[in-house]
Length: 325
Image 1 (cartoon, rainbow, N blue to C red):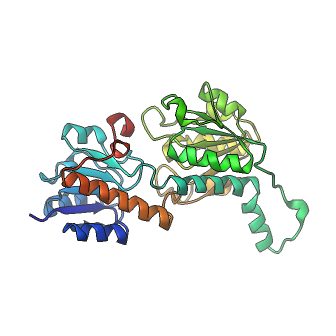
Image 2 (cartoon, rainbow, N blue to C red):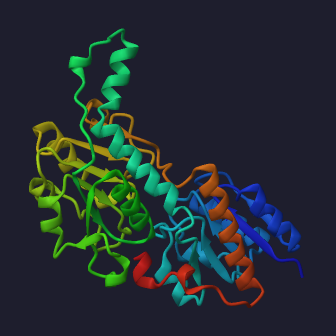
Image 3 (tube, rainbow, N blue to C red):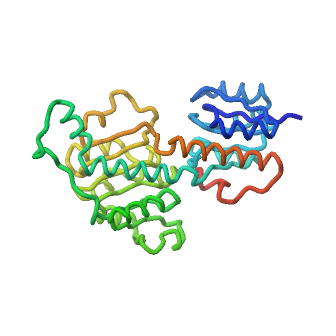
């Protein structure tokens, strides 16, 4: 019997498609952000044995029940907030994620946002394009000697910590769930989030979206930060209260923000952030460089094929209910 893998939200990379073809798997892909009914219809029509989740709004229990042959749900990436992991567990479906495969890419992106802000690149680019050439207008600073505060110390944050150390930054992290070894020799462990926010010159978010972290950075938390501090978010948009962030930026309570994620996505055309020149944004691309997309696709397909062949999957890639809820 031919096995079928459906990729919801776009195809995997060509190298990963080649793995599926070599395994004799029938590979189907939908367009980005298919609606709920479209997902249900597609999985039912093709009797999917596995589903790869790319660009979707939400995979709920009805979608998971659409194909009685479904054996595994695999996220093309690391965050699984768009999958009802608890429902998958009730249905006996393992949920896998390509954890760490795009960590270096996201870490580089977070560093790029920091550099763009600290070097005042957004305004300088506009200044020169407008005919300006006056160095007195430059408001750049150095990252060297500043303190980077990481909220979460997973693989992305660990990679960013190494980069920041090379630049000359001091690094502290807050993560109540991480073992001491995750911090390494050069990353200090903050006693609590408030302390990290008060002491950091740059705060970079690297926590998953859960009930605990939704709205984690709000008006109170932003009020604890230095007026010269920068906020970087390459995690999930829902972790930050955007209204509170806009107010903090307008009031000068913090100096700037670099954002790669939003809630919802795509954000509205009239988002008030667009009017602030202390903000630099990107369309959730931190983890989708060509290199990262290829590696994420390959690992996602390897994970799917392992399950379909009744082989073991490394625990690193297995999502537990608390990871995704």
